[in-house]
Length: 210
Image: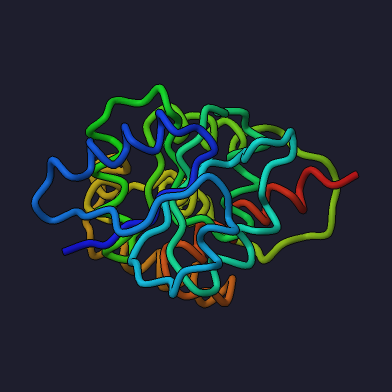
């Protein structure tokens, strides 16, 4: 059973998410609240925190994501699909991001993926990230050098693709992708998929820095 906490300042959204998630036998909402005070008053007895990015303010809760991601897995479900918000949330440590206009099954898939230790972006957000990764950049401090294939592999990882899916897209074997990933991890000194994703975003930030 995957235990879920839902924090959203709109009661209708909270009840809607609870109804949606409870339709699956392996998912259970154990806490819901309108703000993070409700969460901090609990014992954090959950596997995934489903969190709105904007909680009754015009400020995204990026600092809070950074704090919470150290103790729980965080899935952002937000009305905002702005690239700056998506990138900021992921850089802060979010393990996934889904917009509220995504199909309902995307949220269910995202909760399961995040609970299992994976990273999830809905398709439209993956396109946003792809555009950011491919955008021409400025002259910033030079990041570790990756080969062209390693850069392509890192880009696909950041979009949430599995090694097998990357292999099909690059028309190479999965074993070759595994090798690329090990090289990337060594060069960038990172471990899991979420860290690889954040490393890709850090490269964007360094590249675009004036």
